[in-house]
Length: 414
Image (cartoon, rainbow, N blue to C red; front, side, top):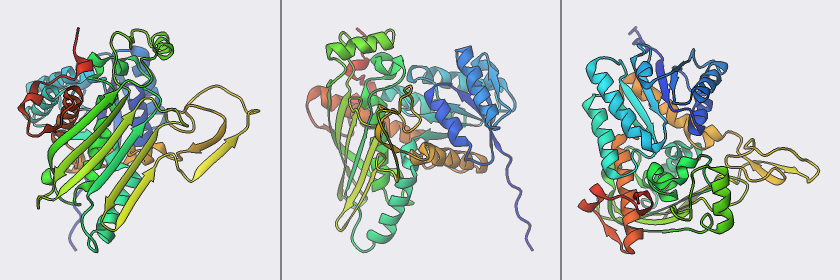
């Protein structure tokens, strides 16, 4: 009888960043095997200490809070970095990782980065180049691709419907909520733009994923043209602009506005030259129970649909039930009374468990993730083309060399 090969050891991870998204990742890792979170660094001591405590309380460590990025990277017990810092810090962090690994000061061999990979195409390309230069395995953390509904729905459509009909030709994706939690998201130069930069990356990539044949490379679909538009619907109005300035010190939406609504039409071709389309919209101007993700995949004789605010679990709370605000029922929750949908397992429904399980498995076994920094660059290129289309009012046809140096209007200084 042949002996089973020895399984690789658990993957030991260091977090760079301790904000909202880092907390979501910690929650998801409780459902991932063969992994430890052994270190965390962020500039604010109270935040990194609190995240390390959350990790240790969840028995995912032991986790140490590091006072500097250099200390985290030099820790010999860290195999991989989860890059979760704000957008304007990611390139600087990647340069430090590249230098530490190439000089031998760090034993890190893999990196996973939250979306977007860069605030513009030049940044995204440099992030990819730095990872490749240091010979790091890399994964792009696009959680919606790993949503339980997306994975199951795509599998059924392509296995049952496509062989009896034909490939899907239209993917629709919408994501909207009432606005981000942190000031830097509202600052175009730091974040890279507005809602187009922040959320369209999700919709673009989940649309591409649904339209891509299982097992085929993502570049089996070629982007031919994009048309985009943006709007300032809510947060530049006087009352709401004042509320942002009050709640988020340093946010100025009158003199330095960023868009709170964006729409996209992306035309692609498959290997046979057949046209397929992604339609997408994103918004920070939606007020409902909380975060809403709507997805659809359509073909000649079938349709797949998903809405995150139509779960199987709901509660009704009368006006006699009072209490403080929070997000205990759904992310970006806007109410605590009435008929409330509950996403029973947000980390799974939104794809965080699936993406982290996949990245850990790939990094442990030396496999290439289905989402890499190459995909992160492609998504950034599409988003930049959408911004250019919105600025010029014209369809942008790809390839377009001007995108290499393009900066979205809300991200331009001055």
